[in-house]
Length: 465
Ligand SMILES: [Zn+2]
Image 1 (cartoon, rainbow, N blue to C red):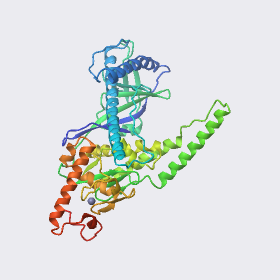
Image 2 (cartoon, rainbow, N blue to C red):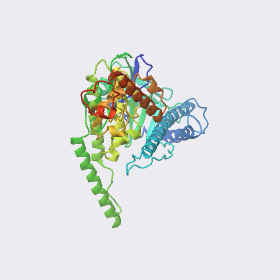
Image 3 (cartoon, rainbow, N blue to C red):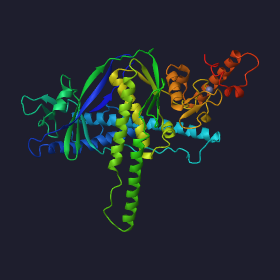
Image 4 (cartoon, rainbow, N blue to C red):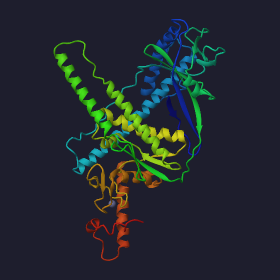
C-alpha cells in the first residue's frame, strides 16, 4: 500500500490519501484490453506534448486550453492536460529545490575555500541542466469523466470499470475483483473517483484510493523535540534518544554488495575485450534488496520515535544535498542521498497519519553551532561523533548538540527570517558576541579570560541563562 498526504493548514484536520495498489484488471475475454492499449498509444504522446510545454514555455496549468491535435475526446484531452500539469509541476519544484541546494553547496564550498578549510577531495559543485521528463511508464490518471467505477451486481467480481475509448459510445467494461486484503482495507471507505491505471509486464493494474481525515493532536505550544538525521544514527532526538543505524549489519551487507558489483564490472570489461556479445548485467538485485531493507529499517526507527514521544511536536532539518553529502561521507554513493532523503519523508508521513505537527527548520550550521554559546566552527567537531566547543568547552554527542539546535530553531523567528547561509552565520555570530558580553557581566572583575575559562570544568554553567 502506498501513501500520500496533502499539505494541511495549521490546526485543521489533515486529509490523508491512502492508495490501494496492485489490483489486477481481469480480461474476461482475450484481447479485450487491446482497446485500452490503443487508447494509450494516443494518450501518452499527447500527454508528453503537454509535459514538454509545461516544463519549457508555459507554467503548468490543468485548465490550459487544448492546443494540440488529437484523436481523443475532449474529456480524455483534459485528463492528458491535467496529468501533464501534475508531472510538470513536481518536476519544476524538484528542479527548483535542486538548484537551491546547488547554491547552498556552492556557498559552503566558497566559504571553506576562503577559510582555507577545503579538503583535497572536495570538488566545486556544478549545476547540470535538467532534461524535460519523458513518460517511460504506461500510466493513466483518470477521473470519473473518462473512467467510472461501478459496483457490480454479481458475486463473481466486485466492480465494473467503465472506460471510455477512442470509439465514441462504446465504452470498455472491465470486471474488477478485489483480493481479501483489498476488501479489508476498503471496508466502509468511500473510494475516490479518480483512479490510476498502470501497465507493467504486459498486465494492467488498477490503483484505487480513499481519503481519511486525521485530527491534529499537537498544539503549537506543545513540547518540541528536535530531530537530527544521520547515518550512524538514523534519528537522534533532542532529549538524547537514538533510533536505527546504518552501521553494523547494514554496512556489512553494503560492503559485500559493492564487492560483488566490482567483480561483475571487471568480468564485463574482460568479456567485452574478448568480443563476447551477451554481457552480464551490472544492475544488482541484492543492491535493490538492500535499499529496500534500509528503508524498512528507517520506517521502523521513525515509527518507534513517534510512538515514544506521544504529545510532542517535532522539528526536523531541511536536508540539502550539501548536508546530506557531509553526513554520508562514509557511505557508498548509490546508497547516499536517496536513503537519507527517505528519513524526512517518513517523518512527514508519520506526522500526517498520526496528526502530529512536524516542522522543517533551516539546518545551516546546526551541526557546527554550540548549543550553549552559539559559537560556530567546523573545529567544534573533533570527530564525527563528538561536539566540543572551542570557546566554552561544551562537550556532548555531536548529533545530540545538532538536534538541540534544531529544536530551538522551531520558535526562532530571527533565524527563520534569514534567507541564506551567510545571514544565519552573521546572526549566530552576533548571538555569540552577546553571550560573551553577558558572561563578562555575570563574572565580575577580573575580566574573564575566555581561553583559560574554556578548559575549566568548574565554571561551565556560568553562561547558561
Ligand atoms: Zn560553546
